[in-house]
Image 1 (tube, rainbow, N blue to C red):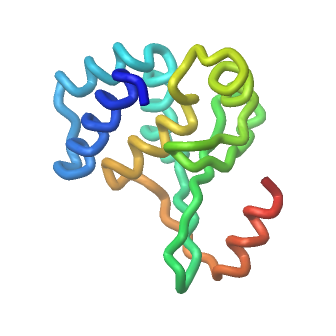
Image 2: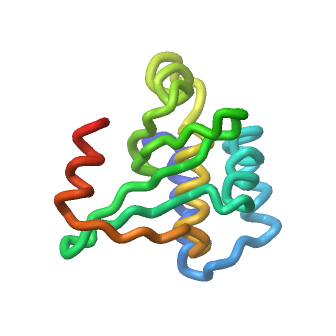
Length: 132
């Protein structure tokens, strides 16, 4: 794990424990993620992050709205994967970013308690995951 990833993880844990973001934390996240962080904050402000939880297992996946006019929705696991084009192009192929704006939005919304929570059966969640 890179030093940048370790710093980011530490900041996320602090935000999650306090449910608040300080100016210093904002500066660090902006330094690490640049324009992707700005875009992620807009998505969170517009309530564009759904946390879809399966019952009774409690397993979850995030569905995040994109910023284009089409308002696509992307499934993602904030720390590991996003179904968007940018994830594959900028993160997997080129290694230029730590994560995409959808992953950032999901992490920020989860840390701040700003997700739109949706509960489905474990079977329904499994059907969503099969589509990935």
